[in-house]
Image: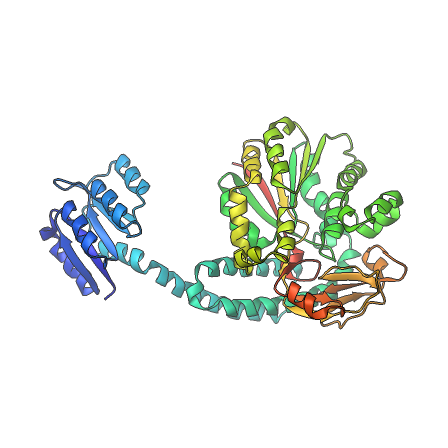
Length: 518
């Protein structure tokens, strides 16, 4: 039996062809000719999967019956069938959360299709997703075996993200583990690709390389400013493509969206990437060009990004735009965000507004220490769900709604993403070695090149020399770097945590969306 249906119609005797058709298709159909008996039947018998309900009946009409059905069986799907084409009736039916709405006369195949859609739609979608993914699986494996450009990797990353989001809805297909293995394979190949090409990108002209963190202002912001358009640069720290795509439908309610990307610097961490976004310069160059600023920056890890506003002003001066009105703000807690929302209209005559939002970065850090957060976001799907819930209820969404009614170009991007780490690798270092989990710098650090990119000449990578003889380790794929001291403790602490600073698709391929109000 494909399902048990309660059909309620005062002219049920005239619908015998329809009833027989559904029965031939494998449905068990129970016939009722008035609303009151339908409600009584549902109160006594819970074994119904669907109700077909006529609107125009003597006594209790369809809408009244529908409301009573929803009172006793709120999750039972109801298809309303009526001769009326009045829009108010459609509105009322939709507001009562009907499963479908059919206008008489209807033929048996229409009824069958509506029943099939309600009762078997999810199963059909699961089967379709399984078939499509298995096809894409083979295509992706073929693509990986050939030569790829960074643009090819971006397209592949988008495809993989689409499948991750689709698999959130299709958990019963059992393909989640297959997709996760393919993601690991792709990250392995991507790490090889970056290791082979990254140095060439750094030393190429801006026109001959993929856009990197230092190019964000030049590529995405300056063209609008030079055209006398106003720009709102929104940098959400640690924002992954899959998370942005999860909230994209909400954004598209208010904006037209062009999707682009840039490549984070290595290490894919805030001090290196976000300073590069606002300055247009690598951290090593900032160290050399602004020694006093650098001295203040390196006092502790929490001060490394304290001069973003100054660096932005210097960058605009270098582009001949030093006379523009600029508003820069960093928001780490909701109170600061709500204060900005309350004052946003005061800033709408500003040529360039730059906003840094730290919530997601803090969320990733706090998750490592909180069993509650680990329970709420055990994996990437949980992380996406939390991000969406935060965004749709956030002050930031309200700010974007305000901006959608202005002529601002909103550039939504991030400095880097994150990855859930799985493989702990032991690394020895002295007391001055940095404490990062996905990257480390210090003296005489070494590691297998299977696990990390080993940088012995930081200057070649425009990286700062933190101590004399600094070298860097940048973790690949889902590796995390742990000191031998209390090794087991830190393996347990960081296993399955979300980290950044290394080489992976989610950390380095940074979404950059251009939003224009509708």
